Image (cartoon, rainbow, N blue to C red; front, top):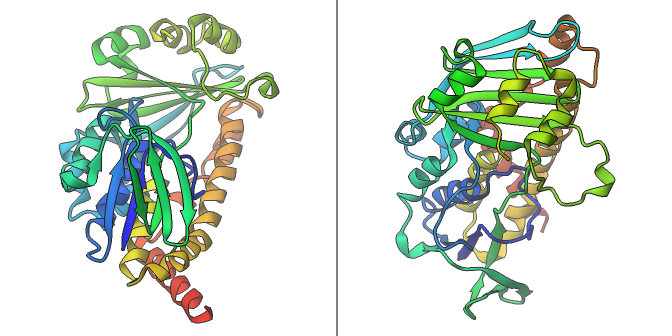
Length: 364
């Protein structure tokens, strides 16, 4: 049985909601490499395996899922230079209470920030080199009676029993990575004294900054409400200081916006997905069972992913100031929103996946 994990495919299987392009494929490959009946290959359109973007935050659910995939997810994260976010602080960045702390989130099991490229390198290390194929730009994908045929720009053609697209989606969030010293002088040393993630809620936008690369880098993220989304279908946007000044006009003079503008020049569910797919493929023995595995995956994962999408959209509206900007109201709206994401029982989730697979197999 062979299965292909692709970085450069479009959505052959509509499963990924994350923008963790390379990380999603590498995590899945690590799950499949431990399934003896699966022969997998990973293709990358770029000349080398690489990751765009600065950092990815891994909440406890993603860390637990990674531990289910790898012999020691903790060791991999340590080697990748993760920085634990022992606390996360949400602050009002505009409005009548600007500068007021909405709340601090602290936990015994903190989230982790890690540079994407560093984590990808560690995830690729245990994979067999003969299964990794860079510089392979996909041109066609054709299902047939034997499975799926895929063709590349270099005129090579492959036949597989199944194809999984793990290429992610473009994000509207703009990530900027700066050297820590510069960030401290511009954003303010008091906001970088502790390895803490800061989120700033204000009129029409949400600003976040946190630490990565063993404390040597700072990631800055600005999310905003599109004024006329119908006129711009391309998810990529030029991010200039003029654009930021326009988007953050009501923030100017406050505690964070001016510094963020001056430093600006211009994945968790995917790991859960990889864990579940690895579990399902470990419980089938023939290519004829692949469709049942994908159906079970869809039945289990689609509702959770859709709930995260819906919740994230609503949370984005709150964090971008589309409610009254008062700390007490924001505390009530935000405090319970992430519990269902972080509290997933991984062992139970895997058992549920296998149960769904068995039900489907019995009915067919």
